[in-house]
Image 1: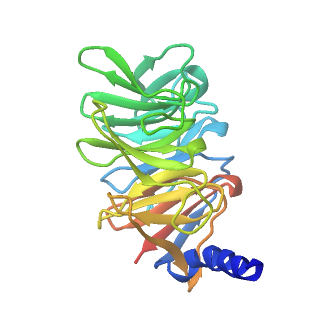
Image 2: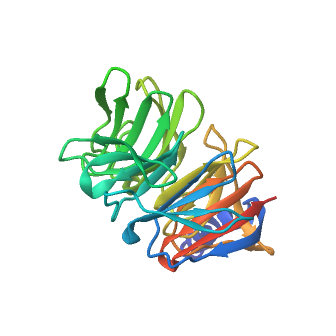
Length: 287
């Protein structure tokens, strides 16, 4: 019986590798640009990509065919800010200063939205007249109504669906849903801004098809949800029902990156990945 149990255990460990689907990634380019632990990345429809290099207090503007530019917010510090979004300008989750900043591409400050002193925004997602942000200190999703100038919050600290433990990166899935990396609960969850529905896209674990420390989230042209795992280094795809679709591979081997955090997928299905501990942004074509 002991031998049988050992074989069952080995089969269980290997099954994630034997039955997983691998999706080809082709390396295009890598940037370093004197980054110092960059954390997040976003792009716009013009082909510009913006990297939040918060330790250096700047935003680095990348473009595959143009020269790199550096954006320093005018008269404001973004040192150690963590999250970034783009919606008619650059939005920054300014974590240590308890605020959301909107910055123009010349560095001008367009909005300075102050949050409560207990809030520590990690990421920001702007859609129409609403700002959503993850709050790692209060373990909530904050919602700012820019028209009515009202705030409300979703969730509290916990492990149940609808609760969070150190929520991190987030993206807008469509007009109704948000996806959030619930980091210490080891999952990615979807929710509506009116709290009417919560659902789980990926679950905790270190095997293929699971996430341990989910970080960046991206959506490609095939509507696949890609999740970067900062612990395992894997980039994995799921559908909107939570079904595992595959893992990124390069030259026939699993692609494991160095502490991937933020990711951005452009209109040509190129994935831009912040590899924080290697101070690199790598660019990959999804096949």
